[in-house]
Image (tube, rainbow, N blue to C red):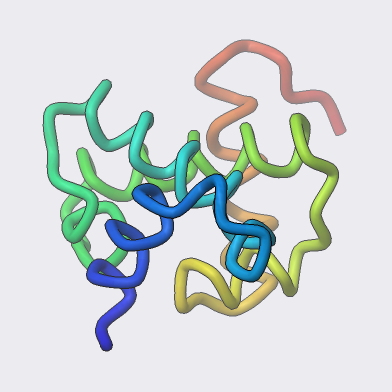
Length: 100
């Protein structure tokens, strides 16, 4: 099962306790995909700038809203934790909230 298929299935079974753990991340990712005008599959696998920015914004919402660890977010998106760090910083910078 691909990540995109899993994402779509997870969004449909949000109420199912056995699969509820990844559901919040899937919902946020699907919401960011819709905002960007792309599919759930594209946000998980796409590499264009437009798609990467949507994924970075989803990573930031997951981190800030759910408090999940960087490795956990990275596993969900099929990325390394250092990619998540970059995504969080890039998303915050676009929002004008980044300070180091």
